[in-house]
Amino acid sequence: MTATAADYLWFEEDFPELANAYCVTLVQGLSPLDVLQRLDGRDEPPRTGADEIDEAAYDLLCADDARQLLAMTTVGDWTLIIEPNGYLGVSEDRALPASAGTRWISHFANINGVDAFLWAEDTTKRLSFEPLFPDSRWGTTPDDVLQPMHDIGFQFTAETSDTADSLAGPAAFALAEHLTGIRLTRELLSATTFVCGSTKVTSMRCGK
Image 1 (cartoon, one colour):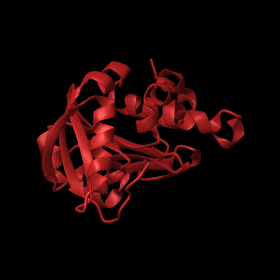
Image 2 (cartoon, helix red, strand yellow; image 1 turned 90 degrees about the horizontal axis):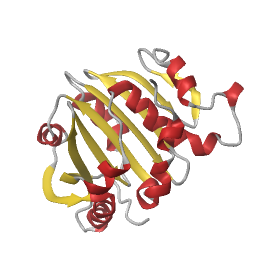
Image 3 (cartoon, one colour; image 1 turned 30 degrees about the vertical axis):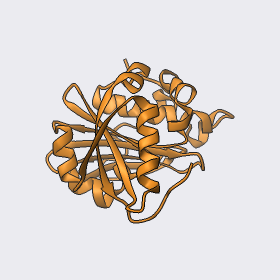
Image 4 (cartoon, helix red, strand yellow; image 1 turned 60 degrees about the horizontal axis):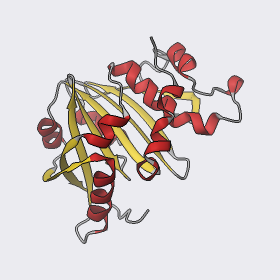
């Protein structure tokens, strides 16, 4: 059964600080250490729960040597990466090379209404689009999940409603579940002790 946007309305309600600006990525068949190596990252102390990783991320971004936190854990055959106030997972110059030999599913959103979704496989971009504007899609297979996108609740031009803005983020979570089989839960985000690493950022994004 396909997940829908309604299945992920809890994210913004339960984790409002993280929901202000986040990137969530799922990488198949690689361990957190493998992912960190592919992204030229360094180890950071582990953190437990969304509040701790959110605080640690802003501390790193505001340090003299500004870095982006990558909070990672293994879920089934996938590594989940959470970036508070980050967008490396949807940055094609980093994500596409890192997807060599695997599947990479990532989505990003911030409080300013900027968002992105990326599905990559073995360095190839299969689908990218802005969840707020799903009519425009790019990649080698931009229509492969078009019907599931309608079923999930993405608001296409002919279907736009007053709830379009509030559904885009939850719909991105549901599409990621459709493509990976991994359902994220409140408990996972609140209770997991994440393996953490960081990567160098090219511009300062300190502050909430």
